[in-house]
Image (cartoon, rainbow, N blue to C red; front, side, top):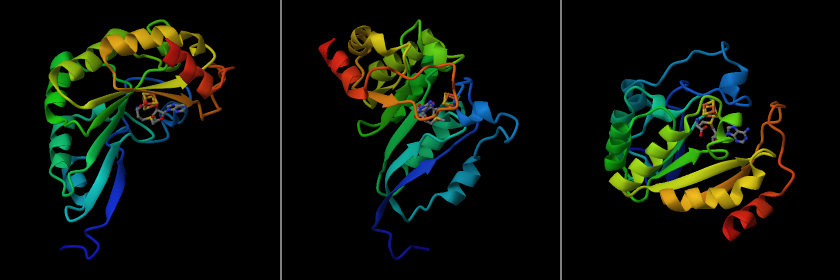
Length: 214
Ligand SMILES: C[S@@+](CC[C@H](N)C(=O)[O-])C[C@H]1O[C@@H](n2cnc3c(N)ncnc32)[C@H](O)[C@@H]1O
Ligand code: SF4
């Protein structure tokens, strides 16, 4: 049945799965591991949740306890979302580790220029793993480069600023250009429970300026 407000555009945030290959220390899935079920939304469940009369503007695949790329039917999920009325943009947030080039190629071929993949990469090869524990640098680079080579979605590099990575902005700029990311976001660590990664001693604006100056 059609909703009377079907013309209203809304954003939707979906947590596809509570699976993840990493153990970022301040992530709820690491802090509360064992207190929740590691599972995923089935395609049938998603079909029930989604309102196919509603014109969503953005569908964000991020979540709080998992990483969308580990959903066992990720490409089927994307196909389902591409069929939504209103043709919403898809925003996929991921650590980027663990999937092979052919999986990313299939992803690239599904995504459109208005879709974005937001990579959470908090440092370079020698520092990313200090927070993104279990991440694999080569795997992340394969992911980003394959997306760029095989499709036309937007690639965002999201960098959580810590004391241990604040000096790396000029080098990050080189990697950014080499991979051909489209945007670079510097964000504050908002989870204070993690004492192993010290807060940055420079501001977000200063980090951005260092990045811009290269
Ligand atoms: C639980 S993650 C789920 C998505 C995906 N697994 C990821 O890490 O990008 C949700 C968001 O929290 C961010 N995040 C994780 N730890 C954070 C921290 N200490 N401070 C700020 N944001 C954090 C991630 O980068 C992501 O944007
Ligand atoms: S990659 Fe995302 S979901 Fe996985 S542990 Fe880190 S913050 Fe949590």
